[in-house]
Figure 1 (cartoon, rainbow, N blue to C red):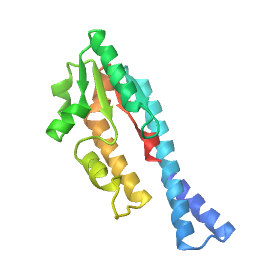
Figure 2: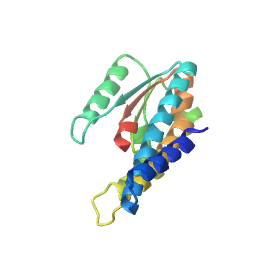
Figure 3: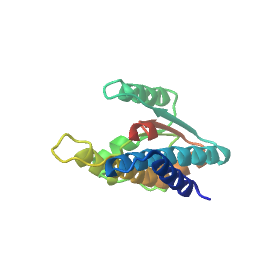
Figure 4: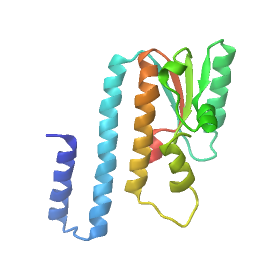
Length: 178
């Protein structure tokens, strides 16, 4: 059986055996198992990617204001000084509001990125979901938005880059979604 079906089964078994029957408790448990499923699926996916990809993936995580951008920019400068061709996807997307095709950046050795992205779904996340406003978005809606932003980014650019042996430096990632 698939991981989602097993998790759903365990949620209902847990609910039935512990008399958790309020809607809020059910939603909390369902959300917890959704995040658990995301982590398990990502770990399985990353393990499979490791077997087929020759590139390097470096993710810089941390709290807001902890210096992630400084670290990523320092790495960018380091690679520039080493004579490698560096493509800053953050700057490109801020200017063009969309991702390039992989064929447009294939000549670069290093790709610098941030999550949420500055393109498509990432713009909606930045401008609406995580921005201080009076609208409240559920954890599930926020998780779905981050997952879609990540899926588009990985399928369109990062997986092809890693398959071609490129180095990807990313500011924030999966851990930020939790």
